Every structure is written in structure tokens, then in C-alpha cells.
Length: 125
Image (cartoon, rainbow, N blue to C red; front, side):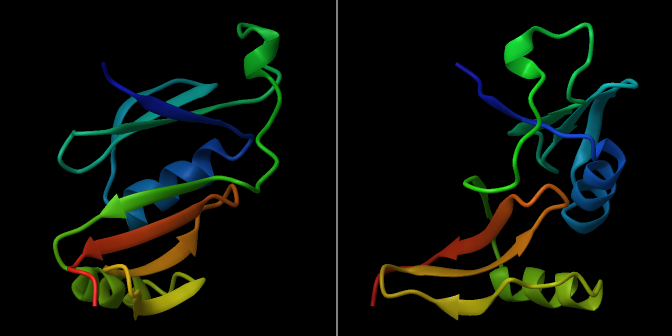
């Protein structure tokens, strides 16, 4: 089984720029109403779909409201990723920190309001 999460949004180009320029995703497929991106290692995909597109069923037409969703991206070196993203002057929503349960992480928001948690897992304190 393979999972591809999708976000219905009018912000296709903003999403493309954010995920490719900030997070290093690649473009798998793109047309005027749909964008499919992949992680740098091609292990996961994320899609974006324009709302109210006539080719889509009603269940895929309502835009995401911008709350209640997050994505976690696991990286080998969260400190290095934090410094790289700070250098791009991308706003950081949660500064780099270590949680008692073992996450060393920070968070930002994508153009759609989706929380992006960037983490390296460490043993709990």
C-alpha cells in the first residue's frame, strides 16, 4: 500500500515554490489544476489540487480551511536543516527544541496553513 496525501488549495504555485525551494521536494507531475510532488528520496508524495475544478468529484472540490493538519518530515540532522531554513529567511513557528519524549524538532507553516514538523528522533530523556 502507498499513501499520497493531498491538499485542495488555490495556492498551487505557492505550494510548489515552498516545497521545492525550501524543502527540496521534486515535481513528479503537474498540470493546470494538479501538482504531485515527491520527497528528495522519492519515498513519499504530496499532491495539491485546485478547488472547484470541473473534472473532479464534489468530494475533491472544497478547499482546505488551513487548520487541523500537519506533516512530519524526518531528517538526519535537524540542526543543519534548521540553520539552512533560517538562512532562507523562512518564518519558524516553533524554534528548535528537544522534547522529553525524544523529538528534536522545529516547525514552520506551508502556504496553506499546514504545520510542517521537521524532526530528528532521539532517545527519550
